[in-house]
Amino acid sequence: MILSNYVYDKVGAKHKKVVSYSFLPQEKVFSWDKVHLVFGQYLLMHAIIYRTELLTKECHLQLPKHTFYVDNLYAFEPLGYVKSIYYLDVDFYHYFIGRDDQSVNEQVMLKRIDQQLAVNKRMVRFYVENVAADSPQARYMKYYLEIITTVSSILLIRGKKAEYLAKKKELWQYIKTYDVDLYRKLRRRVFGVGVNLPGRIGRSLASGVYRVVHKVYGFN
Image (tube, rainbow, N blue to C red):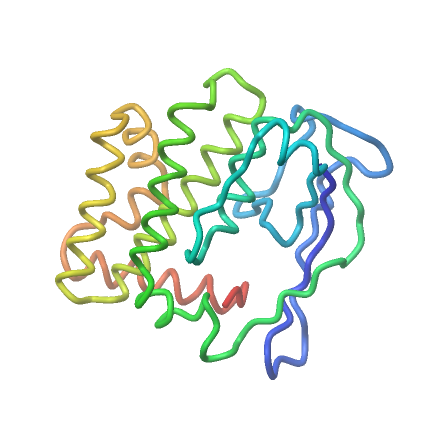
C-alpha cells in the first residue's frame, strides 16, 4: 500500500487544508508496527493506493452497487491483507468539497443515511469475522470503525427527528447483538460516550462538539 497526502479543496476557501502523515517513516518500506497516527487521523480513500493484485486476487473486494459511501469499505477491508507500506510526502489527491449537492453534504447524507448505515454495519461484520485481535492491523481498524460509527451517530443526532434517533439506537443495538465485546470497546471510548450522552442536552452537546471539529477540519 502506498500512502500520500491529500487536500481538502473547499469551494470559496482561500486556504486549503492539507492532510499529511508526517509521523510515518519516509523514504523506506515499513510495516504496521511503524504506523503511529496522531489522534483523529485516519487513512482515508484519498490517501490510499493498493497494489492491484491485493484487491483482485487476495482481498477479492466487491463493493455494493448503487451505494454511496463505499469508499469506507475500500479504505477498510483490504487493510488486513496489507503487509508493506510506503509513504510519499506529496499532496497527491485534491478532494473538492463544499458543493450543495455533494454526497458528503450533511443534508444529502441524511437523505441517504440508510446507505451509510449499511456500509457501517458491513464494516462491523467484516471486523468481527475477519480481523484477529492480535493482528498488527487490528488496533487501527478498530479505531477506523469507531470513527465511522461516530459519523453515522452524529448525523442521526443532528437529524433530530424521532426516526433518526431510532436509527441511531438500532445501530448501536446491532453492534451489541453482533458482538458484545466490540460494542463495549466502542461504547466506552470517548466518541462512544459522546454520541450516547442522554437526553436533549446530551445530544446538543455532541452536536456542538461536531460543529467545532467541522470548523477546524472543514471535511465537508
